[in-house]
Length: 109
Image (cartoon, rainbow, N blue to C red; front, side):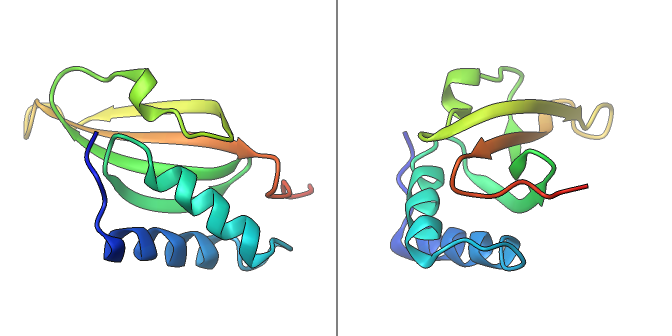
């Protein structure tokens, strides 16, 4: 498992806080979820909100995607999208994993 530096962990927390700014999520909950996300094995390329809760983007360099390594403690994986880069870079994949966290309210609508 690749360890994130302190600055990368803070960056994940800031990105998560910005993503959920429009929802009523306490600082304590944001910190707890950010720590769980930081513990994931794959390096995170982006964080956004989605209909399930939080979407994490990964750029993977290799033909094998190990689902166990995508799991985030306290989060339920609801959707997984894989976008191969194809002819340009056949080994690269953009993976978007959508997680449902109990602490983050889902949007209404």
